[in-house]
Length: 216
Length: 270
Image (cartoon, rainbow over the protein chains, first blue to last red):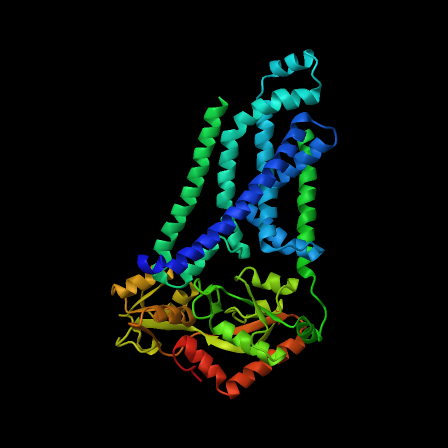
């Protein structure tokens, strides 16, 4: 074990470069999958005639596939049919599609947990069904979704490391290159990477607690 | 009943997507003996190399450059085809991504410690052997073992669990003692701790270990055959010829030996 060699300034900077890509990809995928997941979740909840069954199939199809397969599919199968994208875009696309399916279920569950009496009360006081959804169901449902959503976002951030298989230069990928420079770097590098992932994710958890305590 | 309908729908979708995938795999660019003019038109040779393999293709965190035996060979090919060794773009490949990337047309060739096998020859065209790898032995400097011929049933060999190299050495030396480890790092640590007499695997990996610790050396001739080749899309015969010409040229003018010594630390065995 060679801690001093593994933690040289060059290696640390290189690992931080990797963390930067990890955070960019995770942030973009979190924002996009949250938007997409909310839309799909609401469609599933409201039982729109044609759309809802289509979304059901989408959600079931995606969440029952391994993320690794989706990453490979987007990276290597889509270019064959003319859809080409860069590594970062491919990683964001794969994560967004996968996580949106998960988030859609969280959103649908959160909305369904809102007491039916509230909906009846809203409708009988003259709100349209859209107004009921927007003013009554969504605000209450969203609060209940915070803990499972944050768990999902933490998973997403960790899942970015799967993109190592398509050589996305994220944290795990750069760690492998550092390890490639010396067998004695393996354990020190892995320990440091673990600390980095933990720190970032733990901060997400803290933010989540704040959000929860505010909303009650 | 409703569920079974949906189940059917889902299975149909799965089958369709699998068929799409399978269809993609078969699409081979039936061209093209003019692949080389495409490279010239592009003005850059795009080569798939490893970024994490010591001595062959390893990215330097400080400079951001990728360096190694494979890189120097790639530069020589770029010089031969385009007249400029810097007219090159290195793209990272792994053992899993290199063939899809080649057949996607993202890279012109693979120079990434790729062993020539009959199986792979069905998917790509290989150049002549550009690096003759094989299983070998790593020992502490000054060890009485100077090659596979010195190994007896009293020798303890260290290796990686379930690897073919363990199987090979058991066939070569009857009754030899073997200690297996989860990975080469552990095996190397055990060798340093004196738990065995020699460590065995591909010499390309052993040279990487020896480069990290000058107290150890690779001894003897490789006793298995792992020829590394440069892979190109099937049918790109003109590129294969250009690569073979480059290799022949490098070997004739002594440049190959220089590159070999620079990375491996000794002259290639003839």
